Image (cartoon, rainbow, N blue to C red; front, top):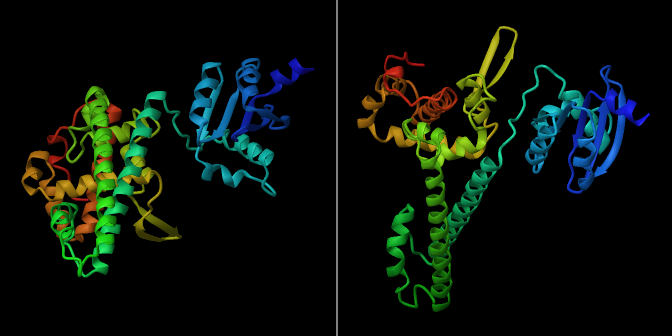
Length: 352
């Protein structure tokens, strides 16, 4: 009976938990033939004794590791964004119904899947996430120092380097302006700032070293505005870019396209959607600004005609987003097609 049940299973949906996994299996007709709760230690052994089948999971913490394990056992494990699975959920929410919805969603021919990340990709992604957190903490400390100084009537010009240069002088301010207690507090915050600077620099150097050794990152760094940080973040996020069929899909995944509300013959385009990978989207916008503030490089990169035509009708912030979209599409093409950026390929492009 158990062997008959195993051979009848065609599709399995797994609702991943920290210690317990809820599993729902369906046969070729879509009938539920398996509905069990497994511990984390049981999962690999159970699937090792099953015939190969299609397995669906939501992309979340731990899903990439499990997907690699199941694929190594001969199964076809696929990851999906949770928001694309939600419409298939029926009735009130519970773990078994979530697993059933996953099993339904993974069979859809139009479903968009998430590429399973390798261990190296996850390591690189971890470096970026730690660096992002440290940069955020550093920004918070700098803002706190500025706020404390403003409460005492001391204003410093905007910009990190100006506060860094002025801080030694500010700390020698007479006690009637800045109390000894406040001087001590600001000194402690400045010490935290220095320590965060050191950690961010170490992580940046490690990321750069990895990027210099990766062929995909090296090709991406030939694109205008893209350096080791952006190239390595992109490789960590999408690997070779196989999950996208064209650059427009990648730009849409980053959230660099307008929100579209269409009905009948009327199409309304709004602000950018801001969907997908926020960290990578911010990096591409920063890359666009780097290109825009260096007009002398436009001609060399083949972007001069496009930027000059676009800047006549677009606000500079909108122009930065449009250029970020263009750079993202170019970057995907460079990564997916395995070739370096060539300026002549866009030198004659029409303004968009």
